[in-house]
Image 1 (spheres, rainbow, N blue to C red):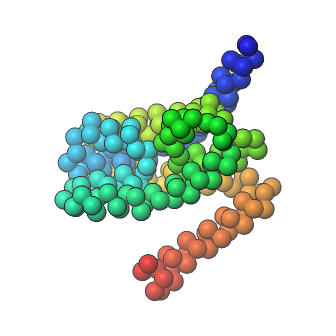
Image 2: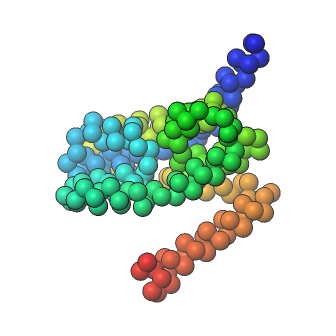
Image 3: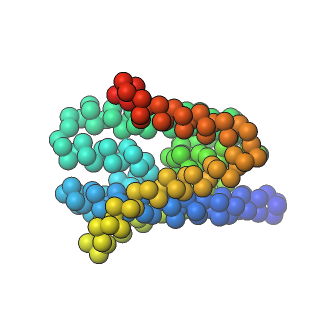
Length: 212
């Protein structure tokens, strides 16, 4: 019995330790969100509430811009859905790595914590992803994302403009640090990175296609 009680605890702690780097990386990005939201006229606590209940960087930035611009409700609902539609595929992929008997309420909690970085770490697990492990994995990112928003919303005036402008690249640097090391030993990850980079450049720089 003691072994069954220790196993979930150790799995949670392992996930917690693995996710702490994501949580730290989320702080400067969500700081920018808190800063932008307050600059757009949102109450600081509204910005914090949005981060606490969403955990979706691009969707949140799109949402507050549309709210500030007075977009209609249907457009406000559809735009974040399209921006975050990749999470459907990530969640579908994760269902192949979790226990098929896992209760729905636990699946809903795990679904809330699916982000690009959390998914990347969970997908690289060699064993099945347990609920305690994923719970630990998403704890630090949630805390970091919310804390960064608090700092950005309430202490933005203390930051020099140059530092504020640099905050947005932190998330991309962190994601690169997550996917590049395993790509050295895993050809599938390496080819996925190469293909994704090529497609990104294609849609960014090729005339005509970059209008899509």
